[in-house]
Amino acid sequence: MNLNTEEILKGLTEVMQGHLTAGADEVRQYATRFMERRKHRLNDIAYLYANKLITAEQMQEELADEGRLLEAQLLAIHAIGKAAAQKAANAAIAFLADYFLKWIKPF
Amino acid sequence: MPTLTIQPATGACNPRRRMFLPTPGKYFLHALFAVLVLASVSCRVSLIADRDEVFVNRVLETARKVDLLYLQLMSADSAHLKYANFAEAWNNTEVEIRQLRLMAEAHPLNRESSQICNLLLETFTRYKNQHQKADIYSPALLPIHRDRLAEYFIALLSVEKAKELTKP
Image (cartoon, rainbow over all chains, first blue to last red; front, side, top):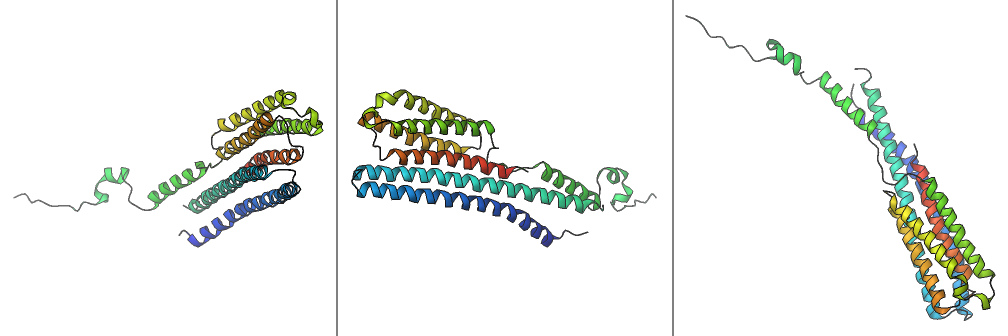
């Protein structure tokens, strides 16, 4: 009985794709939400500066804070990606183990 | 005169070789795949820490304390926005955030969460020091800062939520 590499590759792709898609959806959802909220905050900062309720220095500090927050949000996205990659890798290993178990059964 | 005969060195005429050294073939493949299967079954990739309910509760509790501090600041009138009136609340909340960071750092494979905590602490102490230095907090900036600090907790909770993806 020969190993069917095409079958293995097809199975691996399907298994990993499902988990990676779930991770990508999670990232998309999170990024969409935080971008909307950031837009509101930036509008508010622009309004405060335009109406002289904050100084130019304060506005710059606010923008630096937004930069720091963006760094944190990108770290969160990185972690979500890692979680999806972990799930996909473990699913691939499980698929290979199942495949080999079935493959050696006839011997 | 005795004659010397040389026999070919085959496995068939060597019982010891036949017993202990199987010829390449079915048995070798069995062994190889048994090893492969065992290795695959016991192997598990770990890129990120498992979800920690205690940490999640701590994030929620710290978020509540930060929110409460900002709610008190927003409720106070300008005359009462002096730093001294809120010094204790600022310090208590800072301690909470520092503890949260310690918890995040205590876990292996939790680099992102501990870095988010570092950034949160950096932002929080900037607001605290600003309030202390100016002895007034711009009421216009209060809701923006409250909202921004909440975003850090959302980031931390999103990481914990993503860890659920890793469950088999």
